[in-house]
Length: 128
Picture (cartoon, one colour):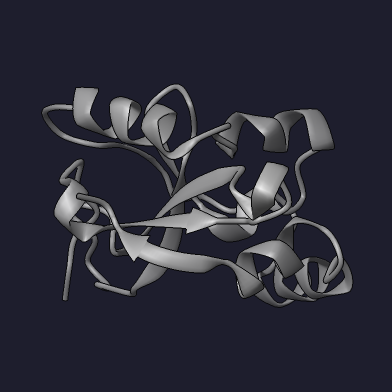
C-alpha cells in the first residue's frame, strides 16, 4: 500500500483537455495514505501549487478561485513543481469540518459537468 510522497514515480498527470488543442489544464494526482497513518486507507490526493497534497474530496467544496490552485496551464509547469519538491510531503488529509465523506462525495458527483467530471474523464499518464 503506497504512502503519499513527493516522488514523481507515484504520481499521475491528468490532462483535463479543455485547453487549446485539448491540452491542459493539468492536475497532479496521487493515491495513497498519509505518512504515519494508522488506518492505511488509500485516498486520492491532488497537488496544490504551494506543494501541498490535499485529499481530493476536500477540493470539490472549494470556491472556483481556490480550485485554480490545483490547475497547471501546461505539463511542464506541473512537472517543474513536482521536480522541486523534496523531503517529507506536506499533506492536508482532513475533510472540511461538519462534512462526512458521503456528503462530500454527493457534492462532487452533483458537479459532474464541472471539475469532478473533467477529472473523471481525464487522460492520465505517469509523470516522467
